[in-house]
Length: 106
Length: 196
Image (cartoon, rainbow over all chains, first blue to last red; front, side, top):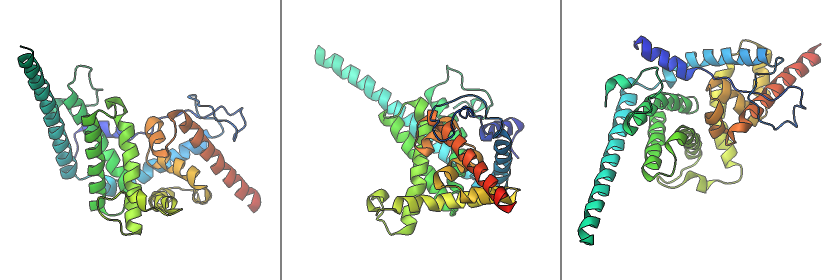
């Protein structure tokens, strides 16, 4: 069982974020303008119905789509280890390069 | 790595080291990318391999600096989309390991490979729809509209991530979803009118 804070975190991550549809007053097929406003009122019920269905579908498939804790933890640990090793190597090269430059300029 | 910094609800403070930020990104995105792939690929081992490939690519671009850290999430979704597509291509025909699967495409192969993953996700989503009319309307949507609906509502993608998967500008995402919803509603209205 996940701790509460972590569960809230994943619920938040999985939450559908609102997006802005075009202005309903414009012709539907000719409107290519980006919008960030609220969903057209006439489409809102459909949007809500699809959102509910999506939540149900994600929940129904969670056991199959969720990574095992072992896989996720092992992959994350390996990636972070590689990331830190890359940075350490880059820093060492920068330091070595600086020292070499200092020696050659003398 | 300070363990208390991982798994919290708070946004990453600006003073966080790059390694902690990367760890946080991995923790957030590994489950989401795994789920995205698993909705389109049946075999669990393949899902894990593809997820690993996506994050190895992410690390590689961070290493060579070809993608800015703030654009990494979009990049990850783009790579995941390609990885699923390539997996479907390799299922359809024998392609040597290490070769670019897209290089073996004949006309129409890309669309058919994309259809494999899309169909899987669409079937799963349709099963959760209560109304038969809505289920039929989703099934009958043109492929690009159907894709937008599945990505938006089943995968729960929006904004930059949805744009990355759809291969469009973030500003065009809302327009695509809006058109898909109009198409869906139009299809249901036509069916209702035909039945009346």
